Image (cartoon, rainbow, N blue to C red; front, top):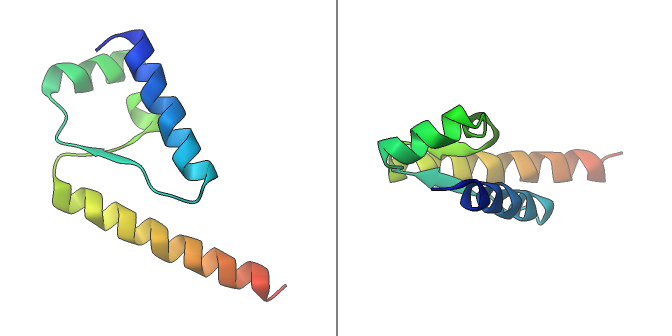
Length: 75
């Protein structure tokens, strides 16, 4: 991994969220995770060790989006 790839992931994640979609990385190799941590980017991303946990985040974000959509509709 290099800086350009890390920044590309951040940009891709941002585009997903701008379009009300989830973006979760799972099963990163330790050197990649370490690189992102050293660049202080890991905390900006949704990263999980397993696919199952990634699905949990996606489902929670879908519920949050539905909840906030309903809240906005009631105002």
